[in-house]
Length: 179
Image (cartoon, rainbow, N blue to C red):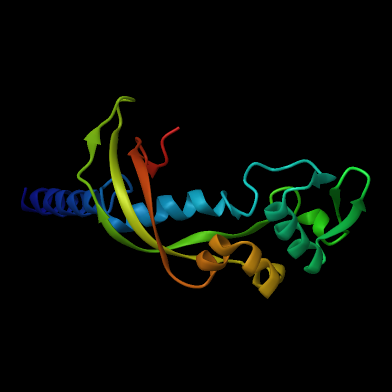
């Protein structure tokens, strides 16, 4: 009888400890895992709307941006003087980067704050998370002075730690971005 009680006590303590380390608990470690899993599959890109190539523009700001990618040897440019546009096509090197020109992914370095989970419209508890991150796996072309000058938001994001905000939903097995 004493042996059975001791076994049950150990099992109960183990169950309590396992609950504390559950992937569904509202903890910074669980939020970091969920955010990193999401951002590993969702890269940061210069052109999230993915233009079609060959790409034509006469807009001076777009021309400056595209010309920085020409300088980085990702694109070639042909001038069409009769219609006042520049036509950009991908180089062999740039073929891997077009059409979005992704320059890395967020790696979460810490959770700054989060709200207590509350049940949202979808029926799952949700929390608002503010996190710090760095951009990992930045390609060489994204670090060139011309590209950094043409895309200042990218230059700022890749220069050091930043902060972000996300909504995370609790599922039966973990936290994730709500659909």
